[in-house]
Image 1 (cartoon, rainbow, N blue to C red):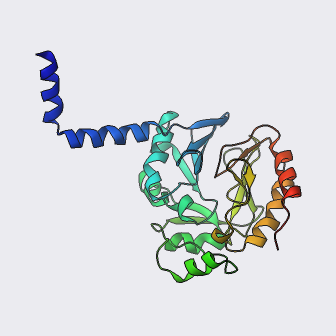
Image 2 (image 1 turned 120 degrees about the vertical axis):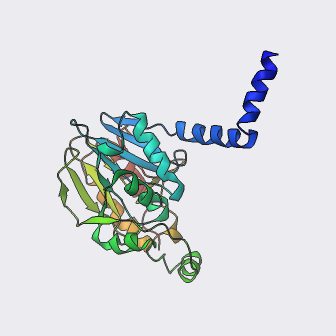
Length: 265
């Protein structure tokens, strides 16, 4: 009898609904933030393939960097909860660039936190319009994508725009490093105090270091040129937006990659 009673209790909630709720909770529960260094976490938004980042000051104020695809907004907030912070702790929102796999969840996070986003001035209009910058016209897929509608994301509320070399006075000081090519306003963020470089999409760390997909860039040759800036900076951890972070001499790994993967013709 007790077992039958249990079955009736589950059915009363509606089997289909119960299964959906459990799956939804499980998905969000799995979005736990991964420690990178003290007070910096990586958010796996599509496994390790797409990442956001959480930066927390000693006073508890939180900065979020990159929000994944459109459905990732709730995962960002779940990851925030996993470190004991909430929407009211978030005081700043940043994007590395205006592509749908980084800005897709931004509108959701902006609503949850009541904050607007900072982004480089050359990508600000694209982010605000919810449209990715043009793709590389030297590739067939890039030309085709430029002609087709769609591929956008919910418009992002932009509150501040940045320029190269600007020092943001939070999270121990964040240097804006303009690395255009993947998009016109693509940037890396150098966290000076913690020694973490958030690379953006200049270089992927997917089964090893590699270039981003050529047709997804606005100008692939420029991407491979400006990526060399990453080898000139001072950091001890590289936080990739595609792939796991590297803490074992990452600058040397990046230098070696750049030396062995020269600019393509």
